[in-house]
Length: 399
Ligand code: PXP
Image 1 (cartoon, rainbow, N blue to C red):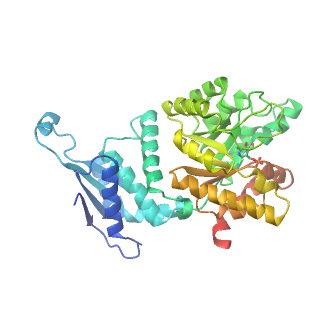
Image 2 (image 1 turned 180 degrees about the horizontal axis):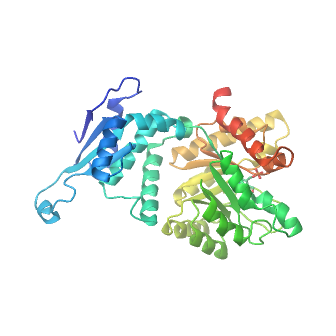
Image 3 (image 1 turned 135 degrees about the vertical axis):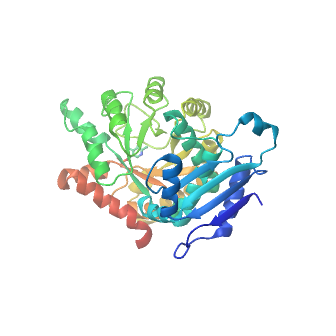
C-alpha cells in the first residue's frame, strides 16, 4: 500500500476515519501520477507539531501541516542513480485542524482533506511561499484536486460576496468622490463578507479604473471582477490579477446585467478569453442562465466556476413560478457540480429570497449587491451586511 498512516497522539474526540483518509491519499497519489510512490502521514497534536516547526523551520508555534520530502537536501545525482519511490512525510496536527474547522466553516473531514492535499503538493515540489506566482500555481492545483474530489459546499456554509457597484453609482450621480466603494468594501469585509465583487463596465458608469486598482491593493478577502469579454478590460484584468473574474454579457443600454451570457453561440470568443486568463492563472467564472447546454459548454471550454443567474427566480411573482425557477437553479447547480464545475449564484437576491438558495449544498457563494446597499441607506452598511450574512449562514440549519 502506498500510504502509511501513523498516529502520534490521542485521537479521542476527533471524527476520524482512517480508512477514508488512506483511500483519499491513495487516490491523490494516482491523480498526481505518483501512484507507484509511498507517502507517510503522521497525525499528531499541537505540542509535537510545534516542536517540529521550531526544529525545522525555526517557527516556535503550532501549525496545521508540515511536509518533509524524502531525502530533502540529499545529493540529487546520488539519488537519481537509485530508484526512489518515497515521497516523504506529511505531518498533520489534528488539534489545529479541529480549530480551523470553525475558522473556515468546514467539516473536520473537509479540513483534513484540504490539509492532506496541501501537504502532498508540497512533497511534489509545489511551494506557495516561494513567490506570488508559485502561490497561484499551487492554489490552482489544490483547487483542481478539490474539484475532482467534488468536495461540495454541503460540507461548509455558503459564502457571501458583496457587489459594491451601487456605492459607485451613487458617487457617479454627483461626480464627486463619495461615497467611496473602496471604503465600502472594507466595511463589508469587517462585517464578515467573504469577497468583494465589482463590475468594470466599458462605459465606466459606476466603477472607475481608479477603484479597480485601489481595491486590488486593499481587498483582504477575494476580489471578483465582473467584466465583458472585451479587449481593453481583459488587459486590465491581466494586469491586476483578480482572484476570480466573472464573464458577463454587457449591453450599454441595460440598467443592470440582464440574463446570463450565451456561451453556446459565443463559444470560440469565450474560450479564447478563458485561455488568456488561464495563462495569467486567473480562474474564470461564467454568468449563465440555469441551462444545461450552457453549463456543459462552460465545462468544455475550461471555466472553473459558473455563476447561476438568479434573476428570474428573484423576479417570479407567483409562488408557483418561483418554485419552477428554483428547481431549474437546483438542477443546474447539481449538473454543474457533476461536471466538476464550482457554482456561485446571484442577481436580484434579497433578504426574503436568499435563504432557499443559500441552503443548497451545491452553491458555494452568493453574490449580492442591490438589496444590501439599499438596506444600508437606512440601517448602515455594517448592519445590512451582517443581517444578510446571518440569513446565508443559518439557511442550511433552518430550512
Ligand atoms: N452577479 C452578477 C453577475 C451581476 O451582474 C450582479 C449585478 O451587478 C449581481 C450578481 C448582483 O446583483 P444584485 O445587485 O441584484 O444583487
